[in-house]
Image 1 (cartoon, chains in turn blue, green):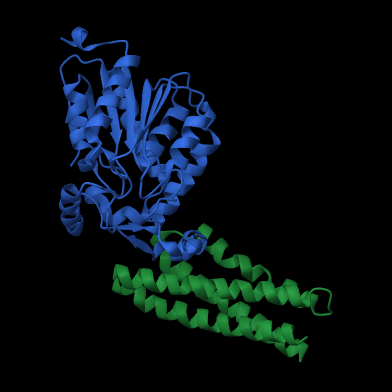
Image 2 (cartoon, rainbow over the protein chains, first blue to last red):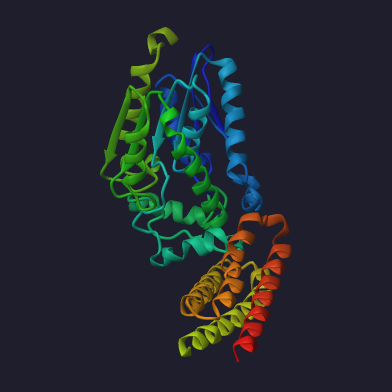
Length: 268
Length: 119
């Protein structure tokens, strides 16, 4: 499930972080395209995900953070430039790591999920405090349902079939995951002004899980001198698999090349 | 005075409903049926809300009466589910579920004592 796309002697790499209850599967095509553009790309399953899914309810956001941080530190020993890219919870994780590590070369935050206020959040979400802050969070799970974060109907049907197998992603979101994500979000929001790294924020204006409020918050509060904010109009939450996936790759590559000290000709 | 009694009665009703619902939950959640567990959790959440509202109502109606002290007595039970939620861990969920049931039983007994005190 994990993937690595490497070239010999490459000096720049991207660590990709997948979303909540997802897996590297959702980032693979995006990662391949970044690699074609001259970057080494790494993506591993976060704790409690993939084959470790039975442990998802025991996993805390600090487990995700520590794992991703170790991945970053390992990559930093081998590359001059290490960028962080993440989707959904992965984007929040990327921000959390950048807050702690000043030597992150840049951040790509896709569908950053600081708040859960998308248009598919259930009508009974006013009960969230009961669900999140009592022991009920260990029992409650949101069923994944249409549109599964994807506007493209063909892709959506494929993802829906895969979700039923609960291998590349879960077909439900445990409330404990939501709790941990929101706890991590709280920490990230407190220290977001510590981020002064170049940052590219991409978010759909029709994101079904998290509205533009999350992306707006990041854009307005980071201290970065270089910050780009792109609102995508033809996708839902899972941008990297949806209608705007090629545009997302194009903008990511342009961003990375604009801030990188290396370029493709040097790699050749 | 009537509102005070009604709020106390509703407190006892929702409290006892919660006790039975959490005990039944120990069987229901064991089945590991996601839809069943989720729907039952929503039901428990609604009961909890009514439980909290009844505690607040009792405190409101006892305010400025000689029974205000009784309101203070049951006020901590408003926070107990959140305290337990904060400290609980998935690995020991049965223990914390039992703790939740025990605190609900205590709050019920407190409510019964208050009822005896008022009458």
